[in-house]
Amino acid sequence: MTRMNNAIPWAEPTLWGREEEYVVDALRSTWISGGPYVDRLERDFSRFAKTPQTLAVANGTAALHLAYLGMGIGEGDEVIVPGFAFMAAANMALMVGATPIFADVDPDSWNMTVDTVAPLVTERTRAIVPVHTYGNVCALEPLLQLGRDRNIFVIEDAAESIGSTYRGRMSGTLARLGVYSFHATKTITTGEGGAVVTSDDALAERMRLYRSHGVARTRYLHEVAGHNFRLTNLQAAIGCAQLEQIDRIVAKRAEVYEAYRTCLQSMPGLTMQTVEMDVSPVMWAVGVRLDAAKYPQGRDAVMDGLSVLGIETRPGFYSASAMPHLYGPQSLPVSEALASSILVLPSSPTLDAPRIHRICDALASLAH
Ligand SMILES: *Cc1c(COP(=O)(O)O)cnc(C)c1O
Image (tube, rainbow, N blue to C red; front, side, top):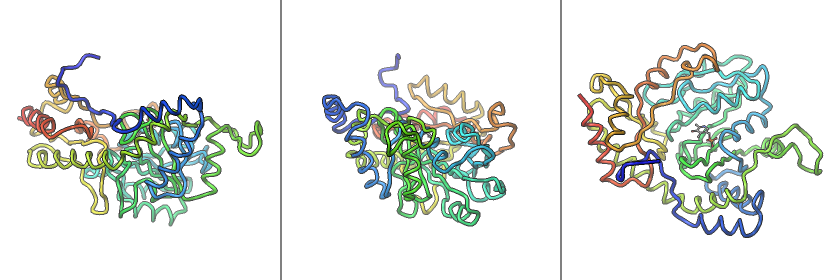
């Protein structure tokens, strides 16, 4: 790929620690599928998230799939997911034969809320999946209360919010179950990878079964028709080194977010995602919503303009309503408005203040 010398990439992994050493160690040990780094990653992640059970898996999408399988969600069941978010939770609902039901999101927090979710609950609703988009944790307690009142599972999709907390607890650990992604762009990475956390031992046991062919106690005896969702020892080795660095990564992300807030908040025509009082976010991605009065050329033209200036950005997610071939016809006015007006800026913790200022100046130069 060719890039301007001083181009600013949208994301950059932070392999700042002993990643190489641990991978070589795993390789030389010849334990390249399962192995001790997988066990260590699960222990280390549980300690970091302050959660009793972590299951390492092949990726964040597999983590969601495993959650649904472990909870017995399938045909005839409904799973409520946000209309504006990365669609893995919706797609895995379809994969297990369930129906994703789309809740619109809040125009300020860009997340689902109890107000958008509650009217969609039916006797078929088995799970609600709050997605903590861009690292911003949903207003969770009312959603958890709704789950308790109606006997519905809540599954936090914390793929984008590793390190973000809600009332002092790690996102992903407040509901019965939480999932994370360790993709290369995410806050910590194993290349491809993910995890499921839960405090429910029986659920963890069922998910261990589905993670590995449905075989647990007796070799080749399949108790359920399981998958292979395992993470490799080589990947887990990277994850262990990443977790050793997580405090530094989180601190750098906080600096980047603060630097952006300082320059963006005074710029007309740009609105950032609002964060609940209860949330201490680790922003995985810094999004801005463009006001059409200041940016009449539209979001896509602004992205092109930034690209010419050597700044790589991403658009907001498509609204679920833009994919009726998958999800059926939907009316999601807020998701649609966000989808066409959000621009996600380079958000890597490797960004320094001069580059953040260059990005803000570039955005200002494109305003009318
Ligand atoms: C990245 C992501 C996933 C999927 O994770 P993979 O590791 O890429 O499979 C799921 N949900 C959300 C919200 C994500 O951002």
